[in-house]
Image (cartoon, rainbow, N blue to C red; front, top):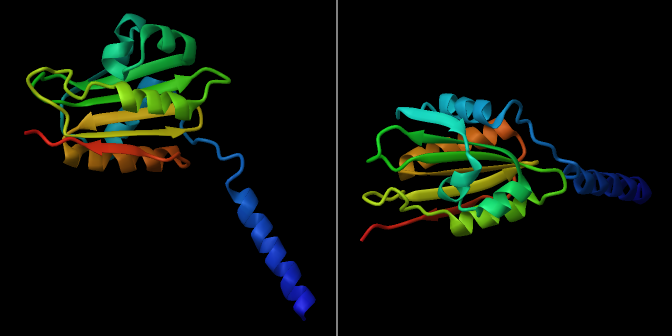
Length: 169
């Protein structure tokens, strides 16, 4: 009886070890299509424009230098509020083969300017990964709190989220 229990325990432990291996993203489509789907699922009620990120504007939208963006990013899109007094920006990046998405996510988190709109500032920042994708949203707290779960649900498998809430003094 002890032998059977031991074998079952080993099998359960082995299953647990391999359960996280090879986790793939469920994200499909272009980076623009993915952002539009997240907006739709989160029911964001802002007028937004979604477009590809021009290389020369990479630092403004992502915090990545133009050189890092060119070397690391296969494609990228941004969805921003069409009214400048609303601090809202979502970014989806697909990294090139062999590039560490977690490292790119950390670079975005560390370098994105949450005050890029000058007169207004994003209250909350969320950055996460799923497979070869890096997702970033910065906006009002309640909007980030609705968009982050929409991304996680759509992606299926995500990394460790990096978050920050900035207090305006």
